[in-house]
Structure formats: structure tokens, C-alpha cells
Image (cartoon, rainbow over all chains, first blue to last red; front, top):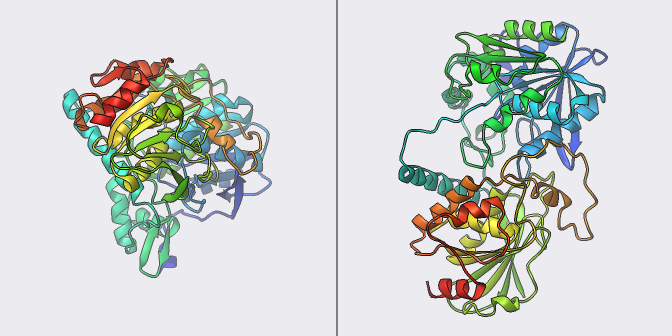
Length: 301
Length: 218
């Protein structure tokens, strides 16, 4: 039974609705008093707003209206035909427009951190404070292989991706039990507690007659290829004119960027602060929710 | 003109048979905001085999992607869906179609037997590196019929095309197609990505008749 699974401190959003983004329904989730000052939170890739179920209530309890949303194809948002960075940014702006046209504090984790960094660069009048949680990719570490070997690796990746695209019509994610889905997620989130991962299944998956399935669009997959370079995200950081708080976990993590402290410090704007959390992985707000919430509250005070 | 409808994820693609025949088809890929022409263009008449044309996502008789999100690798997937239907092809691409044809030639090198890259709308894309950030919240209304999707026009003129990234697809085509010449550049313009491609082995600069002859005999 899904309703039997709880997690200490986790609380589902107080309000949920959808916002239209150019024909696509984006699921919006809110914690806290509707009349309180808003703070916007963007989740990471392959996550969903429910991953803030412990972290967001802490900010709500401090007097904020915490607003998050499921990126297109993630969580309860509509599955799109296509996904790209610019579309994710437009979806974010559609959510901002539905909350406030004033400058508001924004928090982003991982991909959400990079998205909010670009949004703050493109639309600085919409952001009062920027908090980036382990979302500053700065370098790409290629394996030390020959050009010939790299060409072979890319061939394999391209073929796999195109085969995946050919098989997408009516594709569904693999069903399983709550434990099986939690175990699949653990492979990419090995530092997170099994009970938390089991809880996430009940939030981020749906129960079909043949088992549980993650809600995320089966079109989306890890890895891949493309022209994007990590440094294209970091180069936005010096532009930011509002107070910036960057929080990095130092522990190696499969989903982390492995961003070096020096890479951030050299790009940090004058109103910027970097906090390194020793022994904490990529999901800083899940591993250390109280500590990170206090950092955020101090930053926006 | 006979049209076959193919499904690529949530987008229905229109693949047009411009001329029936025997042998490996020539697959025409239009430029940005264009669509497949109603007949075989005169400059492609020399191709001995059948000629087909694909309307890319958001263009011509193909579907618009609701909520947009267009990127060239997805359009490479469009071409691959057409290849799955037709079997091995030679690609002729104009502008945007030239870049997408290059990606397809590298991505599915065993089945895309030669790509001819020609001038046309959307050849340069967004350049070799990101431009100033922008988040437009609206574009103009779609034309009657819905295509070309104004969001496709916006997004596919901002997509970044680094020369070294494009070159990796030329390398894939050269090493995996089994052809001595895998890519033929027949246009005049040379955006940075195309300069990177031209520097690769297995890529030639030639006239269109020469390219058609080369791949027609391959």
C-alpha cells in the first residue's frame, strides 16, 4: 500500500495545480501560506518537485510560499514531443508568471541550478537572490582513450540513441514493485537512504495494474550526446548581479558534476558566496536538508 | 506525389515520394521554414533512382511539436525514422537539412550512403557558441495550416553548432559508411561548423552533378 510509506519530515505540497506553457501542462506544487513571500525551486534532471518534500516544508515553516514545478516530461507534468533547454526555460518563466512578476528568490538543484542561473542571466529583473545547489557544471572529464576508441564509443552511443528513438511509439517504463523501483533509483542515488527512495516511488511513480512505473517520460534517458559544453553554464555565473549562494557537495556521486572549488571561485561574482559541504554528495538538500535550508534562509534574510 | 505518414515519438512525419524508381533512393531534406517540393527539383533530375522528400518536425505536412523543444539531433531522429522505412539512402540536404543530413550520415552511417550538403535557409544555425541568453515567451502566430512552426524557426536559428562537434559526425560517416567519400559539400557558404566538416577525411568539395554521380555509383 502506497499510503503506508512515509518518511520523517516529508510532507506533500499544500496545493497543486497546472500552468499552461505554450500548450503543455506544467504541474506546479506549493508549500506554505499562499499569501507569504514566494521562493521558487527548480529540481534536477530525472527528479521531480516531490524530491523537495522534506526541504521545502522547512522553508515554508520559516514563512515562505515555496513554489516548485515538475519539468516537462517529469513528475506530473505533461510529456512533450520534444525536450530542450530553451523549452525548459520557457516553462520556468510560465511558472514565474503565474506566481509573481516581481523579483523573487530562486533555488535550483543540479540541472535546475543551471536553468535558474541562465534565467537569472537572461531575466535579472525576475530574480532577487540566486541559490545554486550543486548545479555548476564546469568541466567534462573524458576517459583517456585514443581518437579511434572515442569514435567507436560515440558510434555505439549514436546507434543506441537512434534505436531508442525508433522504438518510442507507445513505449512505457518498466513496471515493478516499490522495492524494485527504489533499487533502480538507488543505482544513480547510492548515497540516499533506502526508505527515502521507497518514499519517492510513491510520489514520483504511478501504480498501474501490472506494477509501479516512474512517471517520467520514457523518451528521456541518461547520458547521450550533443553540442553542449559544461563551461557554457559556468560562464553565466560572473554575469549575475544579485546575491548568489553556491553550495557544493564534495563527496563523489554518480549524478554529480565533480565541480572543483577553484572552478567556482574563479567565476563567482562580487555578491557571491560558495559553501563547500564536506562529505556530502550531489543531493545536498536531501542529505543535509536542515543545514541547507538554514543557508538559504540566511542568504535571503 | 505519394505521401507516407510515419510516427516519430509523438510527431507524425510526412515522407513524400517525388519519383518512383529502382535503386537506392535520394532523400531530400528541406531548409529551415521550407517543405518538400512537389516535384523532383531540376537540379536533382540527374539522380538515377527514386527520389523522396521528408518534411521535418514542425514543417510542411509533418506535425508541430506541442510546446516546441526543437533541436537538430531530434531532426536526425526524424531522418532515421524515414531511413527505417526506406532502407539505405543518399541524403541531399539544404540549409538546416544539410546540417541534419550530416548528423544522420554520422549517426546511421551504414544506412546513409553519402550526404550532399547544400546551401539553404538555416545553414548556420546559432553559430559555434552560445549567444546572449534570452527567454522569449511568445513568437508570432503560426501560419494557416500550422507550419512552419514559429517556435521551430526561433529554436533552430539558436541551436549551437561547434565545428569540432560537427566534425565528429563527418568522422563517423567516413569510418563507418564504407565509402571513400562520405560527405560532399556543394554549397558556397561556409559557416564554422561546415569548415570543421570540410577539414575531415572523406569529405569533398565539389559540384552538385559531381556529387550525384559519385553517390549514384557508390
